[in-house]
Image 1: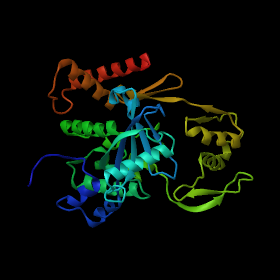
Image 2: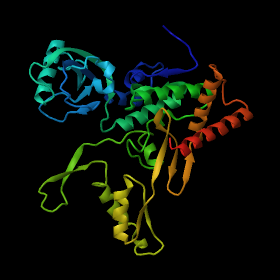
Image 3: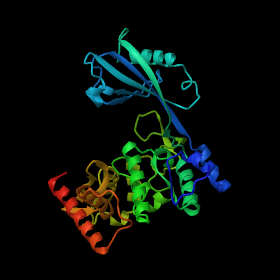
Length: 385
């Protein structure tokens, strides 16, 4: 079947999309996604006697003697999920790939495995488990291997150049580890871009937040793909730890010239020695990651160290999306694009208007909405929300 459309929004796994496009992408661009794997996932739900073993929503399991990677406590999400107060329901999560030994195991074997492992790690006793079931979820997690960022950037460049009306959204579509909120946000902002007939929002910036992972300067980010997470790289060499009497080996990442932030600060300080001892110099640190770097610089140069505190302002209901920031000294910065979208949504809800007009609209409407957005944002700042 062949369909024609002005725009195509794809949440299909990037690898499958690339290999199914017609006209086909170049061989250079079709090769990388073959190595961009997506991990599958299965959950064994166990109903058991409630012993209040833990109250967290979930806990990660690091015991190498068991295969379970994470355990959900459904009652902690909501008591309504487990209405019987005498019972608990735990979801034991196993990370796997489709058709490997774990994935293809029979449900009864997986339930038996989960029972043994739950007892082994001390969260249940013999005779506690009353029932169980298995849920398999294909294509749950994009795999971040050593070269994934380069592969994603290569694919993006090809698609932007040859298929400008093809829009990638969601976790699998962007091969980006977004949670459910972030994934839906990419689709919502994509729709905004299509309606406005312009790129109002960079979808790859959704979930690009310093509180989740640290990012370098923009030019450096662009060399590996905008909004790409930093991931551990394979160990390629070993060095003796600098700690006295450590008698151990410390792994040195292949792609990093620094052992840690303190080492980065010391190396940076060597390039700033011309500022040493000066009365007109102060080292200003941005928490959190910048503090250990700045400390080493200040120590080496013999100059004062101070901290400049910055706090992101999250969008109400979407706190991980920044609409601005506040900082020491009464500094307030507003992301006008995000604030404008908030104002448009508020106006639409107020007026009951469901059919959005195309584009930004008239200049008067644009200015009034921007003013409303600014007032909304500052009100949130002043109220502490």
